[in-house]
Length: 102
Image: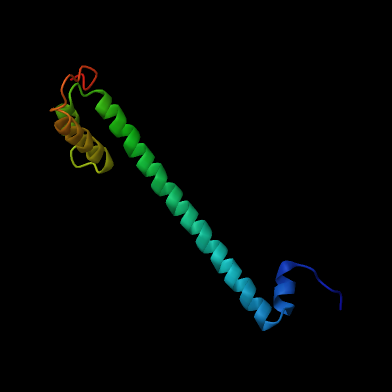
């Protein structure tokens, strides 16, 4: 009988421990690829939403308008609220001619 070096024949001729290791490695590889693809899709969606929010905020002429434009949008709204909080905390700084220009 000729010796076959195809991956499938080597798997079939391997012992139970080697088969188990190969199956576990295959499963781990599959899970890794699934995780990679899912996270890539998630990051793509977040990047798209942030780009849209950036374009929306560029059209806002004041912080209040920006807040209205991105209300309930997650991270962009959080950033606008952080800017609002910083503006409120900075109002009592004396001689702040280089501060906010709004």
